[in-house]
Amino acid sequence: MNQKETFSLGRIIIFGHLVDKLKTFYVDNFDFAVVEEIKDQWIVLNAGQIELALHKIGPGYVPEEGKEFRVESNSKFVFYISDNLVGFRQRLVDKGVVMGDIQSYQGIDSLFCDGEDPEGNVFHIEQRIAKQTK
Image (cartoon, rainbow, N blue to C red; front, side):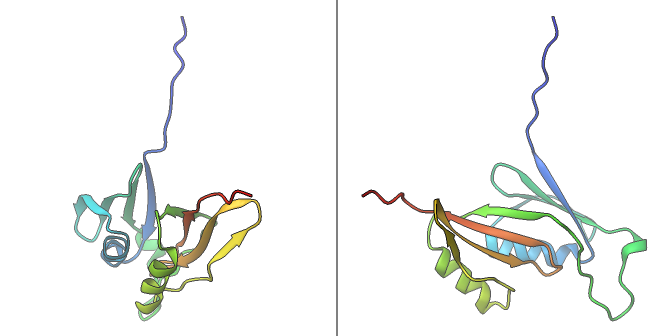
C-alpha cells in the first residue's frame, strides 16, 4: 500500500544583509518572538502558523561600501491583523516605514495595505472585515 505524503509550509527564509536590523523591524513592529539565533547570521522568528527566518547573504551579494542593500524579489509576505489596520499602518508610517494606502476591493471583505521592510522586502497586511448584510 502506498502512503501519500502530506506537506505544509513551515518556514520562509529571507536573505538579507543586515539581519539584526531585519530582526528588530519584525520583532518591534509585528511582535514576533525569536526562536533561534546565530548573531549576525541566522534568526528564526515565530510568525504565527509559520516561521520567518532571516539569513545573512553571501559575500558575493554584499553591497559596495556606502551603498544600501535593496532586495530584488517578486515575493510578498502577507500578514493578517485582527483589527485596527488604520492605526497599525499609521504607527508604521510614524516610524518612517514605507507604506502604501489602505485599499479595499468590491467583492472582497478585507482591507489591505502594503509596506516595505528596511531592505525592501514587500509585506502586505490584511484585515478581514465583517460581511455586510442587506
